[in-house]
Amino acid sequence: MSILPRRTFLASVGSMAALAACGNGIGSRGGDTIDARVDQTLNYLYTKYPNTTELRDKSAGILVMPVVTKAGFGVGGAYGRGALRVGGVSVDYYSATSGSFGFQIGAQQSSHALFFMTRTALEGFRRSPGWAAGAEAEYVLSENGENLAADTAVTGQPVVALIFGQAGLHAGATLRGTKYTRIIP
Image (cartoon, rainbow, N blue to C red; front, top):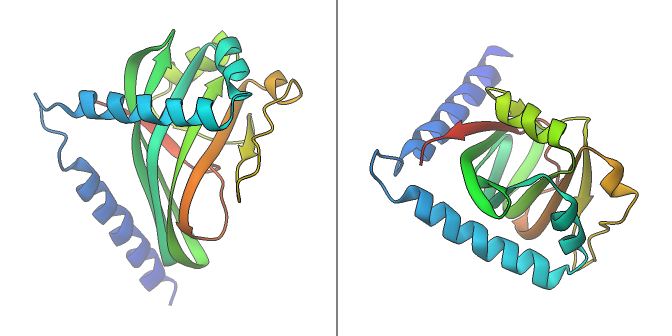
């Protein structure tokens, strides 16, 4: 009985990976598309939540995922692409993927940004072959129009993760277990 859900999970993750690979051909304008979406996402973030500019100004770098799509019906997954900005310039491109299993139903799209508050955290992220969001990140959520609490207590963390712009209905908003992998758009 446990073999079927595992196969279903692996098939779902494999399908997501195959779909994600579409449109990433060599010589494509994928980087330009990602950069345009990152610009729009950052403009939205700084306009809607002006206190996040303090995080931007103090951070060593920002990974921005403009659109992450999460869906699940028992087995779930999420995927998105974004850019790492250092000094306001895109230096690398990344994909974010995650999978889940359990009682869940629905679909949701959201944006998120990881603010690397120390050079050490940023360098560790860039050196890793695949970095998973975990305990070293402080999570700040925005749901139902609430303000993002990006205050000095949060900025003491090496990584601050902001989740915002949710659309759709899917229980739970977290980045724990999300794997970030460098891509060539």
